[in-house]
Structure formats: structure tokens, C-alpha cells
Image (cartoon, rainbow, N blue to C red):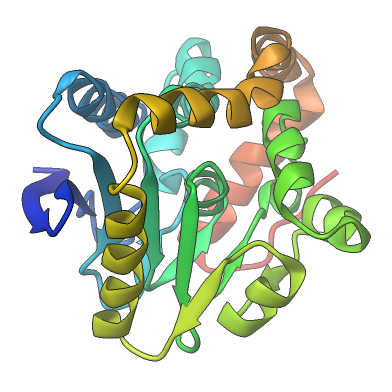
Length: 260
């Protein structure tokens, strides 16, 4: 089971907790990203659930991005869809019109940072974990739909650092640049932040919240299909494809990647 699901009754409504438990690094594959997107679709249609908390019980990783071993074993003609799955999942998050609180309680690299920035309320442990958009470090351009949401979230003077340098941040640093809303010293404190915020939002009519959230994410979705086509097209560029596979192989072999 890649995701544990449970309901949590708050004072003003029910939240669903989704616990990521995909593998030892909580990394993403095409299959488990499709599964998470399907879960969001189910919750979207469930009128008894007002919002979502996404978390992890992994002692080290919240979500460590795309799974290196799976990508290396993916047939070349399927690689575009395997990597592009994170863009599709990002779209699923943006179209999910109920409030989402995310608890970054382990490393959140690449895809982990992507689902974090797509969420409404972002909380992170102060120590023991980092977050960052590390796509450029494995030779991948950062997709435009990610960049637009980062621009809506991060303080302007840090956008180039976040997007172009693969910088990673501890909790307090992530809060300082605007990537995270608040930090906590323990998982228990993270949960208090999440539940307090959702319970506050649950006081308001859900129809108002859902339509307002759709308006918030409208800009990031306007050019979504163009950006998705662009990101898929990058894999027709041999050097981008070769750099990604070299980076994944280097991760497996615990060495420094040699990129072109």
C-alpha cells in the first residue's frame, strides 16, 4: 500500500490524512503518482471530507522525488511518461479544490518539493530535513508550471536561487524565503499546525473555499498544457535524456554525476 488513508474528525469537519509510504525513500514512480492523483480525485468527490493532510512516517524522507532505480529500468520509449508523471500529478494537486496542509517531516527533494509548493498550507520540521527543487542538478529544466507556482509562493529575490541553482533549505530557511508557512520542532507540533489551520478554514462554507482555491490556482493552470508539452519535448533532446539517466545511475552508485 503506497498511501495510508485515515479520517480525522476536527471540530468543524472531517479531514483525510494521506501518509506517503511508497518505498524506503518515499520516492515517486509513474504508478504511485497515478495512484495519488486518483486518491485526490476520490476525495474531491467525497462531500464528507473537507480537506487533506499529507504527511510521512518515514524517519528520513518525506518524499525524495522520482525513483532512480525505476527510471533506470524504464524502457526508453516510456521514459517521457515516467518523468512527466510528476507534471501530471502537479496538475492533479492544482485542480484539487479542497484545502491541503502538508507536513514536511523529512527530506523533500524534486517531486517532494513540487507537491509541497502545490499545497495550500506548508509546514516543516526545523531540523533533520531539507527541501529543494533539484531538477537542474540532474540535468532537467524546471517545468514552467512549477516555476509559475514558485513565483506565486517564494519571495521575488529568491526565485532564481530556488529555480536555477538547485538550492536546498532547512525549515527556518525555507520559511525565510516564503517556501514554507511555518516550522515546528516535532511531528506532534506539525500536526497541531495542520489541524488548527484546517479547522479554521472548515468554519467557512466549502463551496466558497473550493471556488476561491480554484481562482488562486487559475494562473498556474492557464498554460499548463503548453508547459506539459514542453517538458515532454525535452526528452527528444539527447543531452537532456542522457544527463538524467547519468544522474540517476550516479545516485544508485553513490558517486558524483558527470553531466554534459
